[in-house]
Length: 439
Image 1 (cartoon, helix red, strand yellow):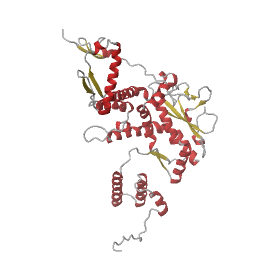
Image 2: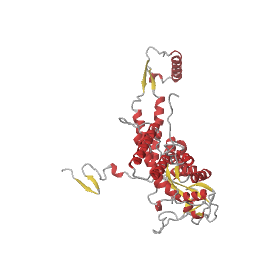
Image 3: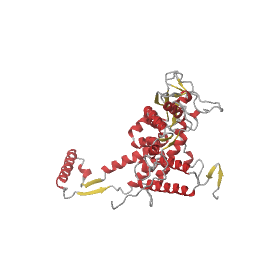
C-alpha cells in the first residue's frame, strides 16, 4: 500500500504517523506560565541576566531623555520643574517595575482629594503638581473593565483602587505602563487583572538555560584535569577492613609528595595517567545560550553581554541601530502616549499656562563619533550655502532657519546665546581682516 498524504487542517501522513495520534509532536501543548511576585523578585535579584533583561530597555528609553522645543526661558523653567519632580527618575522606576511585575503607574499628585474624578490639566496652576509617586500593580488593583465601545477606555479598567481602601483613582491621574501586554484583559486573573504580564514570564526559560549552562561550565573547570591511578588487585584488597584506611593514607602521601616537588611516587605495579576535559566546543554552547537570552528580551548581544556580533566585517553596529530603533518606537508608541496628561500638567506647572507651540522630541540614542559630527557639520554647512546661492528663500528666513537647524543639531554649541547677544545680521561695512603671518 502506498503512503497517503493529505491536508486536513494540518499535514498528516498515515504511514509515517505525521499529524496522527502516533506523532509525539502532536501531543505537545502550551501551559500557562506561572511566576508569583516572590519568584520574580528572586530572579531579578539572583540572576544578572534576568536583571539586565528587565532594566536595559527601560534604562535606554530614559537615558538621553528628551529635548524641549520652546523659548530658552520656557525650556529652563520646564527642565527645572522636571528636576524638582524627578520626572526622569520616576518614569524610569515605573518602567522597570512594569517590566518586572507586569504593570506600574506614576500617580500625579495635585493635592486634590477627589481622586476618583478626572484630572483637569487646564486647571493646573504654576507649581500645581506637588509630587509624583510610583506604584506597582500590587498597590493599585483595577476595578471592572470598561465595556462601553464608545468609551476611550474600552477594554481597560474604569478606575484603580488602593488595597484595603475604598479610595479610587481615576486613570487620567496615572501614567500607566504595562510590562507585556495581556492578549485579553478579561482572561487575566489575580494581580494580573487589568494589568499585563512580566517580561520574565516568557524569557525565564532562556535565562534558566543560560544560568544552568554557565554553572555547568564552571563545574567542568574544576574537573578539567583528573588523575587516574591504577592499583593492582584493588577490589580483592578492599575485603580487608584496614586496607581502605591504608589506601586513603597512601593516596594522601602521594598527593603531598607530588605537591612538594612535582614528582608522583608510585609502587612498581601502580600506573598513573591524567585525563583532561575538552573545552573546544564550550564557546559555541555558551554563545547559543546567550543568543537565546538576547532573543527572549529583544536586546542585542553587544548590549546584553558586551560581545560583538559574528560574521565577516561585522561589528554589531547594525544590530545596535535596529535595537535603538526599537527603543525609539516604544518611546513614540508607548511612553509618550502614557505621559501625555502628565506633560500637559507639567508645562502648566512650570509656566502657569500652556503655549500651544511647545513640544518635545526624544533625544537620539545613537551617539555619533567626533568624525561623524564633523562630517554632519560640513554637510549641513554645504547645504545652507547651496540654498543661499540659489536665492530660493529670503535671506532673513534662511538665516533664522539655518540658526535653528544648527542649534537643534548641536553643531555650534552656544550659538543660540551668541545670536541673542550679537544678533543675526552682519554690517556691510564691517570687514574681516585676516591676521598677517609676518607680524
